[in-house]
Image (cartoon, rainbow, N blue to C red; front, side, top):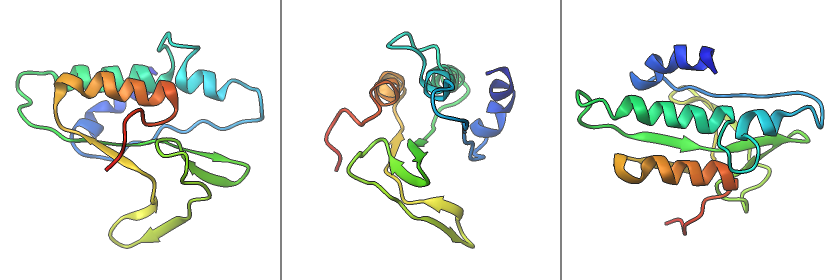
Length: 131
């Protein structure tokens, strides 16, 4: 996680950042990314906490955090915010670069953003109705 923390300044300045884990089945990828049970010690919850800690700086008066959460499993891309979206296509465009049309959530209010984003990654699905 220290390498990720070093790169957070880029994220705070608007550069996209991805966290990617790969490896054989049962090697601890999910544990490493999400943490064990509800203890929130995985890379994703710790990163979210650090992002919102940095955004709580009084000099930052306005922000927008866009989050998507997907997996590649058996060579298919699945949306983990909206589990009904499976086998998503990987696309490329001049404007966006390489992307997947996964569900995205935008957080703009610091009061609930951290707790809601943690609920998303610990459950693996979005806990509220979308739309």
